[in-house]
Image 1 (cartoon, rainbow, N blue to C red):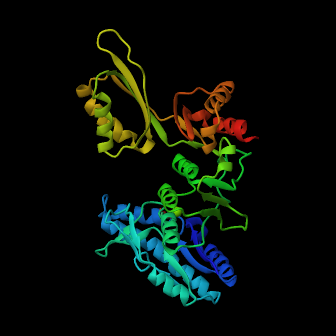
Image 2 (tube, protein in one colour):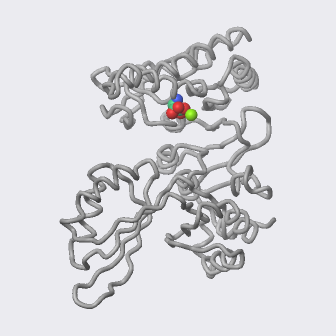
Image 3 (tube, helix red, strand yellow):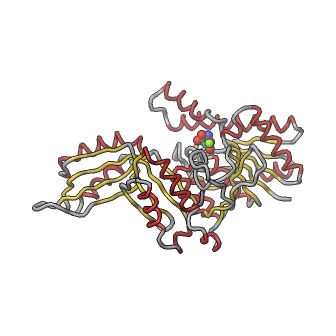
Length: 406
Ligand code: ASP
Ligand code: MG
């Protein structure tokens, strides 16, 4: 008998038929003799709807009350899923995050899990129940309800799998697994059988949007092996696990395109110690997340100046520009330029560590397709370039096919 944690995301529980479908899948699993803990998200669109509702009452709702409100989305799904299992004559009990023993810190809207006391879950399992836990939520020591950040049901599932010592953790979604590229854009994209945690982390944070990055970090830290697969068919999914030697034989695991970045250039920044520090400290202070940074080497006679370019999340652009404008005189740069028409194309793969010429081949592929590179950044397992947004999807296709085959 195995203990299995299954997480079903918003689209997998998006309407009553989908919830019945989940119940059938869970029932099948249990009929094979396994113990099943099910983690569910809110039905798709529900969390966004609740946030909208709150904003109609107050432009800046209290964070405690917002968490109280948002936690009801998942609470609806657990009850409905339990009812669907009861209709199939499967004993099932639903538990809120708090009832399931999930204790968090007090940072509303992005709480961290402190510990999980799984006694209650074990008791219900032992009595023969399927246990259905509300994802994305927990409770502080003082009894306040918290949420774990958008997409946080993934984290609930991974953390429960770790705390329960589960034999298997499955993340069910509406795609068959992790692909070499977005299959809607790249016709030749393929599903991957396995991915290393570090690759998955890069893919998740680069906008492949399969999973919440925090939950992948957690899985890596606690060595939770999990599978991403579809709730709509029986195809095997993608296994996410520790890197193995054979993974390095493949140079590139996947290619992603982030269309949600903007670029800012500060022209003629005086080249002396403290300028960059002042710029990026002030952006950090207003929670602007800066990604790539490029500084040109100093030029000009007399006072030396440099240009500093960086990318940030597009929605943060207005507040960043306002802040930078207010620093213009103090720091003494000449001009601020902003460009929203960019895309960040990235290639990810642990195989880059042991293969050379990867960047050169990427640049060459872009050049022969007349795609201009604006910025470049590299890490051990990733190469990213900023290009014109209008060529983004073309770039993704040609780079994918050059490395991963058409
Ligand atoms: N319902 C939450 C959200 O939409 C959590 C989740 O779906 O994982 O972000
Ligand atoms: Mg979700």
